Length: 602
Image 1 (cartoon, rainbow, N blue to C red):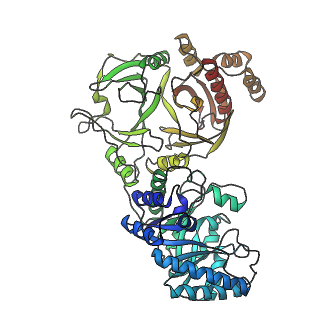
Image 2: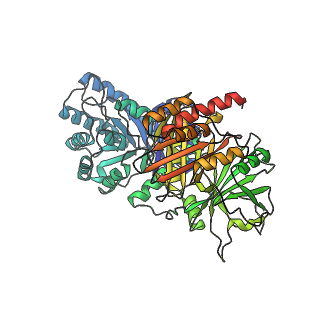
Image 3: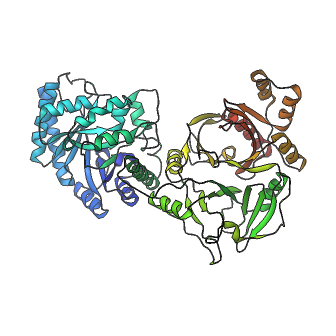
């Protein structure tokens, strides 16, 4: 299907928005009136610019407070409309959006509304323009799509149809029964379809609409269900995004446009009108790669955790550290950024690396160029929204060498006894304007399942966190973001290591010279009030900085190392069927990291 995006969904000047939409692969745009008014380009120049970019102008919007008003006011509205229709002719677009009135002058009179919209359509027809009438969720008298359609049906004018907007429909009612009436609207009378998702919030619908819309698949609305109903009518117009979002309006237009177009590709897949390569769900974490200008602090930390340097890359300054099934690469390449240790890449074990790469490219995550020698294993990688490289790794087979073939062993064998079994999860702090994009990316490109978003209190703000996982938990990635731009080290990325006995692992780490993050005594006083521990058990937890959580499935014990650069490690012990990440303990951990940072001056 054709895809379109309203210019209000992107940041920047009108020229920047049009360029971003074109580069992201959109077929058309809706020109928002304020964007046109603020542009130095004439309507003819905008039309030519869109044509040069391969974009059609699918809609001009909005015209407000038109219908069901006193005759004198309606006469003024027709004069205004004549000017706008002439403008649209210069722009080269033939459809205008008319929102249901919020004017205090508007009367609760459907017959009058239909008559005046018919007159408006008469005038529009003279200019070759169609009028798409839309019910605003906060319209003064018309606030539902079926009410708007009844008025359009009564007017019975060939140049008058309706516009369906997923936000206005689903924000009022998500009941599937509410959507069935869409099928009663003839497809040729649905002049336009606007799409937006939104988180499920209990707030004034106008503020919800103006600030919190997001792209389909990033919120809680059943946008796919609505689109299925619309397509069942025979609607053959574009799928168009109209998203008002404070974060998107401050983010760079290019990446936002790519995220927007990806959301429509995934939506079309969900409703069965597009068949991109099928998702290839990863089966495990092959490795986590740290980049660092100085390997010594990282090496000391890994050694204290019980890791052994087992191999070195044949052609690159990359060491492999391993313990159990947990593998950490330490990269000291000279071209890397010199701002401290960071988690730069994740290797994902894949049953079909080529299929995973095809899926990624189809959803606008092109495979990254990679310098490699003929002897290197053929590893494909794509970039996540935060810049983390994701490698699709095959287990070694006769026809396809695994990534380990690039490394030369430096240790004959691993120690027999280890405290760490594997990587339990990875926590990635997202750029503050990429959180929703990151969730959609990991769900759609990687085929992971998204858990509920949670808010976590930080001493200097509020963090949002959302985990994406495989059904069996073999891959767990926790995505988090602050409420505003921040480079605070306390919000660094971290690697959680699974152990069967966190007390023993923490003690051995400390005895080997590692530093554990200390937690305040008040936390353990509260823990004693909430759960029954022996005195010795609680004292041990306090001594080692171990945190505790429990849910219906099981128990969770975890502790943290000090931060090196922008990375720290977490030792975790899951008992039973515990599925979480200790979110209730996150405020205490974050406060302790702020304190530790202040004490060290880091």
